[in-house]
Length: 241
Ligand SMILES: NC(=O)c1ccc[n+]([C@@H]2O[C@H](COP(=O)([O-])OP(=O)(O)OC[C@H]3O[C@@H](n4cnc5c(N)ncnc54)[C@H](OP(=O)(O)O)[C@@H]3O)[C@@H](O)[C@H]2O)c1
Image (cartoon, rainbow, N blue to C red; front, side):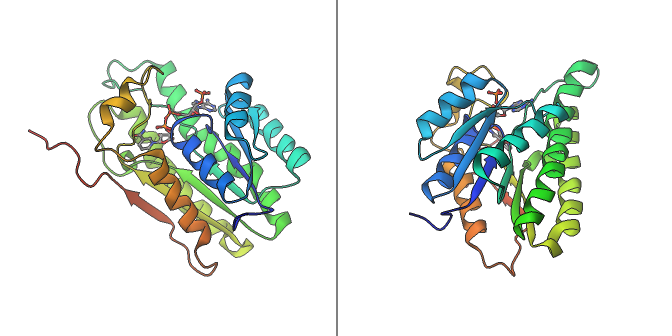
C-alpha cells in the first residue's frame, strides 16, 4: 500500500490542523497511526474520519501520567512505535506584563514539557525496534522573537535546543530527530475553532499538507542522512507596511 506498511506512528494533537494533515499523509503511506487530542471523542472522531486503521486516544501532553498511559496503549494496541510526531501545541500571545502565570505555564507545559514527556517514552520503544524517527513541530517563532511572544517564543526556542540535544543523544541508536519550523499555516491555531483564522490565511499561507509532505520526504530519505532542522514558510506572505 505504501512505503510505511507495517510501521506504527503516533501524532500528538493529530485531530486537527497540522497534526491532522500529518496523520492523513502517514496513513496514506500505509502506517498504522495513533492520534491524540485532549478529549477522547475528538480523538476517536478524527480517527474514524481518517480510517485506514487509525486509532484515537485521549492524551493531555502536560500530564506525564497521561503520556505514559498513551504510549502503553500504543504498545498494547499497535505493537510498538516507529515514528513519533510531537505536534501538540498552544499559543497565548500577550505582553509579558499582562501574561498570567497560568497562561505562561499552559504554553511551556504543552509546547516544551509535553515534548520531553513524549520523547522520554518513545526512546525505549524505538530502541526496542532498532531505530525510529522523532519529529518535533517547532516554529519560526523558535528563532524569531516578537513582542507578545514571551511564552510562545520561549517555548519554541527551548524546543529547538531540546531537539538538538535529543538528536545527538539517540542518533547512534538509529533514531533520527528532525525539528520543523513552519511559518504561517492555515489552521485555527491560537483562536476559536470556527474556521475564521484558517479562512483568513487561505491563498497565501502554508497548508497542513505542505508540512506533512516534508515529514513524508524525511521518512523516505536515506538512513545515513539527517535533515535535522527544517525551516518552511509561505513563498508570498502579505507585504508588510
Ligand atoms: N498554525 C501555524 O501558523 C503554526 C506555525 C508554526 C508552528 N505551529 C505549531 O504547529 C503545531 C500544531 O498547531 P496547529 O496550527 O495545527 O494548531 P491547532 O489547529 O490549534 O492544533 C493544535 C493541536 O494541539 C492539541 N493540543 C493542544 N493542547 C494540548 C494538550 N495539552 N495535550 C494534547 N494535545 C493538545 C490540540 O488538540 P485539542 O485542543 O483538541 O486537545 C490540537 O490537536 C503547534 O505545535 C504549533 O505551535 C503552528
